[in-house]
Amino acid sequence: MVKKRQRWYRELAQSRTNVAYPVVISGHCLVDKMIPLNIEEEAVEAAIRNGSLVPEKCEEPDKLVFVSRKGARDEPLVVVTCFRSTHIKVLTVYLEE
Image (cartoon, rainbow, N blue to C red):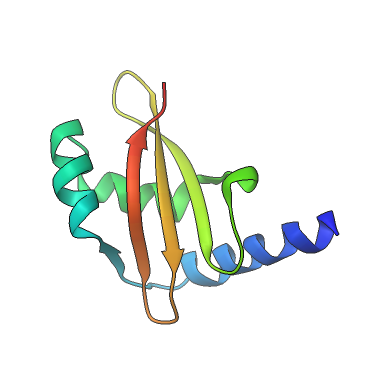
């Protein structure tokens, strides 16, 4: 059971991040999260393309959570995404303490 669960999110992440799927950021995420926290769109996309998956936060069939380091203070940037057939939708972002 655990191996099957691990397989689905890794396969999904590899299939979508290796291809140039467009990243779409929700309005809530942009206005309420990214602007106040001074997070740039490029940092969000870099977290999706190069960040590490957080398996315990992923949910079938299409919710994947990535984490990467941001800025000079090396803060963990967490990006919650929903993978669609034509794009990757960013649901929310936050800096983990």
